[in-house]
Length: 115
Image (tube, rainbow, N blue to C red):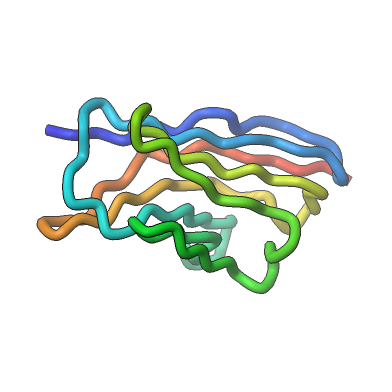
């Protein structure tokens, strides 16, 4: 069974940067898209960024121009480069891999941005 594990979260000052990683425990085949989502306290989980199997990216308006999603298929790893972080970016970040068969989710990694 394939599992996703996020890493790279932590505490950072406003204006700082973090790079999140999402590593798969094994090869995932037929991935249609990889995405990053986040959930802040008291709010619903929201889409942050996605990248399709052919490289097309989409971003939430709130992170556009600051975050970059990428993927390294050879390493079974997805990344989220987060720059110019704001306190409102504070949330648990989850990675997702969408395949023909199902969606795979990680356990999440906490990102806290202080003022």
